[in-house]
Amino acid sequence: MPVKLLLILALMLGYCVTHAGPSEAKKWIEKEFIDSTLSKDQQIIDDQDDSFLLKATVADSHHLLWWIISLGDRIEVLEPSSLRDIVITQIKDMANKYGV
Image (cartoon, rainbow, N blue to C red; front, side, top):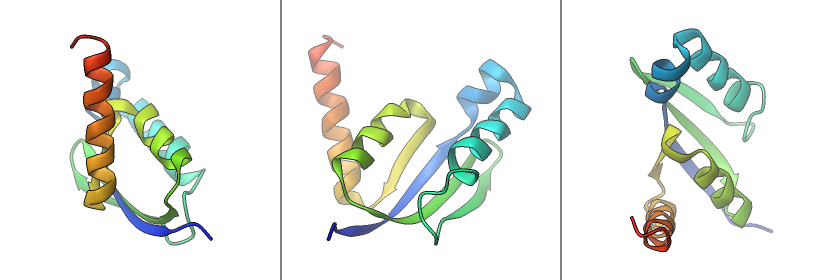
């Protein structure tokens, strides 16, 4: 059985608002996180003008890491710190690979 973890993400709307407008940003949140829930206990909390917090208990897997990386700067892993550290390492490795 996969290890479960409480995932806390900051969903950043700044990119969507800047490039597509506020209504498109809300549609992105609905499509990605409301229509397709990550878990039965998922909560989306309005945090600030341009971000939301998402809390969900999910399986710790390579698919989760791939999904997080695929969302780029539209999300930030806040918890657990162990997953945040893995994401940071992946981003640094990618930057080194591209000479950034």
